Length: 415
Ligand code: PMP
Image (cartoon, rainbow, N blue to C red):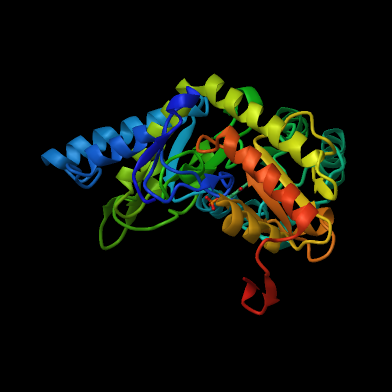
């Protein structure tokens, strides 16, 4: 209906701002609508902002103070230690790419094949060991232990960890894996893109060296993410974007680069994005219990409803995981995932995602056929009614087939 609405008031959780047609949003693992608090913060700053760290002019000073406060808030959101650095980036992909850029020479990298492509692909291929998709949390710990044992003390080593799986929602045993890495003298980076919106991420408690995450998955708009963690590799690396802001002084003979986050934040930084990200972090942190309770209730309903529907299979990566964020990924016997997704959209007004979720190696292992599935993911814009509508929509499809006739053409499924 196109009318601006806020969702969440009746749920007792932070409200999200929506100005789009009132569909049932079960696609939060892809991206999330902005929180009302975030829209308001963005509205406020974009009336007055100037360029960050560009002299003593009024708007620059004002925006710089907002930007640096945002940095502190993002750091505390992930429990940054006093020596940790918070670098603003575009998103998780950019954060991990920045760390890949900063690896000391001859760093060996270990990563599970189940990782999202953003965490699987940025590392130098000759020095990267891919670990197979584990069958359980316990299996993951022993696979990593054995791989590090085989590798030996070959110099710098980095283990890439995933907080929560973007395909199945499984929460990984991050603290145990980080402990194994530490025992072998290796460092760790945590891809927290799917974990940070749903659970507390505490860099010190988890014992990881870096955390990467995206604003647009935690109820801020697109365009801002962060890499938080140890500063030594980052300070020793060449600037990620050699440009204004990253330079201390430039003379004919010598360039002196900044130390600290500015070294890798060349160009005019996305101050509005950083403030939006920080506002989202602060709002979610202040409402953690309500957010978790809302998601847990709906996930229980969703999984139970799908499990009780004949011909529907809900998938997991770490076995039937003890803990999971609000994701149920499923396949339906006899129906292509893309058709299920289209029927849910066109006949029931529900947004889900189908495909291989930028994790092709994992999907190949988990799903038959073309390696695709349907992912329903819960967040603050999801209501109980949306979940009920999804379960009954899938049930109706299984029992009666699609209401409209769809044909699989080169353009996709066409009604
Ligand atoms: N890691 C995981 C687990 C993800 O789910 C995603 C986004 N789908 C990313 C990394 C990449 O995030 P972004 O696209 O915001 O860079």
